Length: 595
Image (cartoon, rainbow, N blue to C red; front, side, top):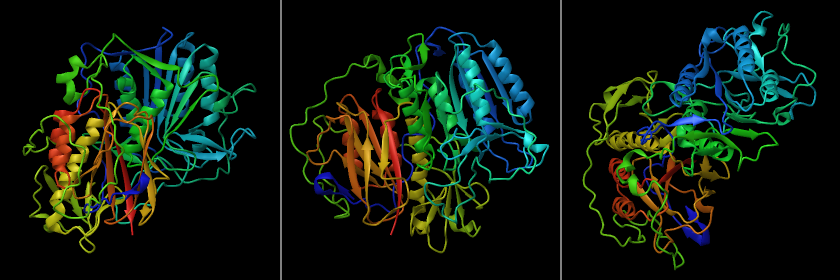
C-alpha cells in the first residue's frame, strides 16, 4: 500500500481486513442520567406511519422488513412519541395504507414533525408525469398482494402518490422525514462470489402491466418530484441504479435493512454528533450514511435529499430533550469528567512524518511508531469474548467433519451446512473463506481457520461498539474489488484537532498499526485527512479502523503498538472496551482485493 509523500505500507496479513468497526448495533444502549426523549424543535407534536412488508404473496418474500418496522416503532415510542401507526404484511394493503396516511394528514397540525417509513420491495415504472424524473422512470413501492395482473396491479403505491400526501402534510404546516428502505435499481457495487450463500435484496425484476387498474391519488397542483417539496427530508436505501441488500446485524437474529436500523439508532440519539441536543439534517444524513455504509460491507450508499428551502447545516430535524448526556458503553466510567466536552489539549505535532516502513518486511519486526509518553499498559491475555451466538462455519461441499479440530481462542464455533445461514463458508478445494458474498481470506487451511473465526467474532463486537458515535470515513475511488497495483484512498472527515489512531485487522486477525507511525502527527490539523494506499498481496478482505478523540489516546495507542503484527483480534476488543474515551468516534472501512 502506498501513502502520500511516497510512503508505502503493505497490508501483510493472511488475507485482508474485513468488517471492522463502525457500524452495527450499540454494544450497550446509551447510558443516560435520565430518560431521553425526541422532541419537535418547533414545539409541536411528532407523529409517524411505519410500514414493513415481508410476506409478499406473488413475488419473492423478504426477511427483515417487518422487523425493521418494529424496531423503528419501538425506538419512536421509547423516545416518547405516542402517535405511531404500524402496518405490517397483510395490514399494509393499498386501502389500509391510503386510509391511515389520510387519517394522519387529518390529525396533523401546524409545525408537527411527521415520520413516514416504508420497508419492502421497490421497483421502477415509466413515469406518468412527463419530465418528472431525470431518467423517465418513477419509483414504485410494492404492497403484499401485488402481481402483474389487473387485480394485483392495484396493490402498489407510486412515488408520486407519496409526494402528493407529503404535500398535504406540508400544507398543514408540518415537516416530514421520509425513509424508503427499498430499492429501485438493479446493479451491485461489486460482484458476489458465486460460492456465497444466496443474498436477499429489496428489489423485484421489471414487469409489464398489460392492464393497469391502479387509480393514482394525485391532483393537478401536486409536486412533480421531491425537489418540488418545501419542508421534507428524504433518506433512500440506495440510488436508482443499485440493489439494497438485507444485512446481518450483530446480536440480532435474521436479516435486516441497514437504513431502517440506522434511522432507529439515530432517533435514539446517535445522530447528535456534537451532543448539543439538536440533530441537524446534516448530522442525521452523515450518521445514517456512515452506519449503513459499514453495516452493508460498503455495498450500500444511501441517498439523502432535503428540500431546496432547507439548509442541512442549520435545519434541525429533531431535538433530544431533558439535557441528557449520552455516554458510550465501555467509557461510562470516565464520562463524568468529559461529558461537557472539555478535554486536555492534545500534544502538538512539530515534526514531519517520515517514510513509513513496509509492514511485511520481516515477520518478527515491528514498525516504529510514535511512542506515547505515558507508562505503557501491559496487554494481558483477555477473557473470551462475550458472544451471544457461535460463529457458524460451513464447508462448501456440505461436509462438517473438517471442523472437528477447529478450536478458536476467543469465540465458539458451530459447524453447519451451507444452506443453514453460515457466517463463514470454507472452500475445501481452494481453501478460500467466503463471508456474505466476498472472499475474506484466500488459501486458509483448516489449521488456520480458528484465527478467521476469532476475527469474525471480533468484528461483531467492533460493530456493536461503533454505532453510537461513528467517525465519518470513506474509500475512494469506489467500493469495487481492487486489483494488484491499484491505488485507493481512505478519507476521514471532520477530524481537525482530534487525535487519530488508524489500524488494520486482516483476514486472519492480525493487527497492523497504520497511524501514527514514526513521527506522524498524532493530532490532525485539517478537517479532512486522506491516506492513499496501494493494493498488494495478500489479497482478500482488508479492514481499516479509525478511532478519533479530542485528546491523545495514550493507553490505547500503546496497546496497539504492542499488538502490532500479532493475531490478536480478541485482545483488541478487550482493550478497546477498556481504553476508549467517552468522546471517541470509531470508523471502519473494508475493501476487497484480488490479483
